[in-house]
Length: 321
Image 1: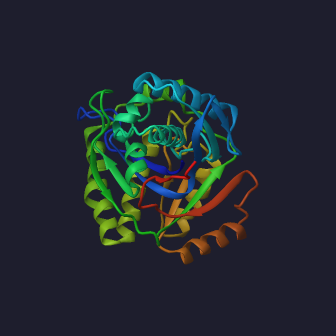
Image 2: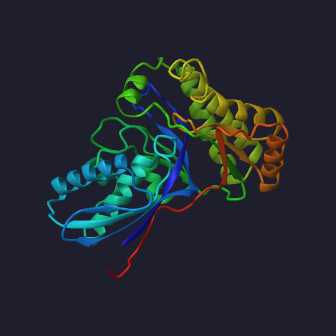
Image 3: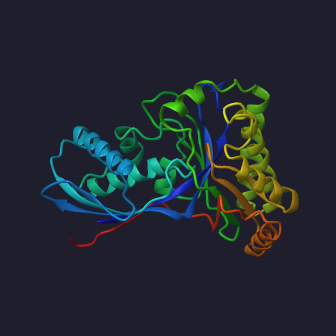
């Protein structure tokens, strides 16, 4: 059994501190090129290998398998080969995608097919945003309705296909975010209370500007809306990110330069450090890359990659073994 699971960019929250009673309602986009790819088959003992495997991920897989066995009561063992994964703790939702990809593969082999939102609760994923959970199944641009309790996942509010000719420049740094695990929990607990006015602005920009603009393929309106949302997110996370709207100042500098010189929608995915700039066409993106090179902004400490939306979820392939 082989499975490919896509990564996502997290664009922000609609009501970060839960004024409405629903916390962490989120918007985000599933993208190409940063997939989890793995193969699984039955084995007499548990074997975890692969070119993309590291000690952290191997431990993460074992914990996930323990949770699955406890919930579903199977004793089977597997040979798991991890071929590819996104960078961990970099804003791609890799933990959720790794856990879901592994779980779906193992359960498929033993003919169990729980719904993804139920499966995610078993493996302790999606504790805040539902973007990674819904995106695993559906791809595209997604808005979820936030959580009332930990007992269920956020409902899907909107899922629309995203124009694939709108190209995405990812600006990455060779370090991971510090905001995961216990530190992320403490950072979230210490965030300032958002005002009703700002939460209303986030909802209005999402529901009345960004989503209609995607459907209408109105790039100018989309770019303005997503940047407005990200500006508010940067303000909201400013103190937690040591007085910066980006967790990586060097990534933030590149995004700021691009925003001043090109028509883009831009910001940071989740806690970063990955930043994104969305262009209306590949021609515009290539002009921007040329501009960055001419102005010596393609530094050794940063990495750049071009991608686009992925309007489908995971893919499962039966290998016959």
